[in-house]
Image 1 (cartoon, helix red, strand yellow):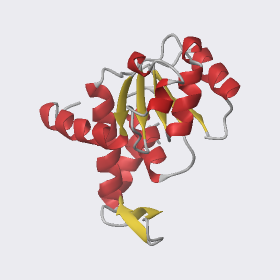
Image 2 (cartoon, rainbow, N blue to C red):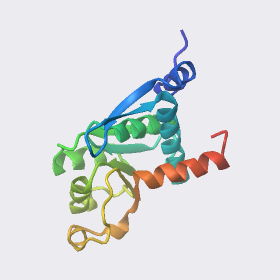
Image 3 (cartoon, rainbow, N blue to C red):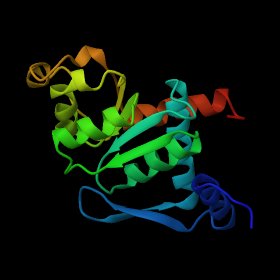
Image 4 (cartoon, rainbow, N blue to C red):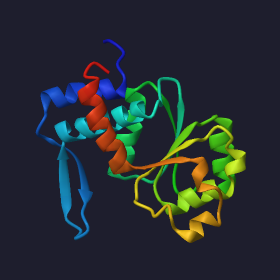
Length: 178
């Protein structure tokens, strides 16, 4: 058997079972909504393309600070698809945990779940000299005055999950072989 990566395995399964549900997640009403293997692979590749559009490349270390959710899977697989290394930790990570993990791993970008994780990074941004790009799953208002009191927001390039997916769709059209 040939060695294959997790994204390649997802691609193989998608070819075999494109319309079978691969993921379920709850909507605001509490109903489970399925995503087919084709939809999941498309999200993974679009997330990967979005990262490539930001010059996140093979060998980069990307912090992934989130709890289990559908976007976490898309991000993790997208990071691996471009040959980067995901550096994962859940939202229960303390500020000290993030300092140790993100600085030790020399992360230049981080994918984070929400405003609370962003505040942890902002409050300790001097400890992350290489961190320049932040991708956030849950929408936040970067013009929020309270956020500005936590640190220098302008130091980071900040994108939402949806923006990365949109950038990735465009990137994939412009670079079909990537």
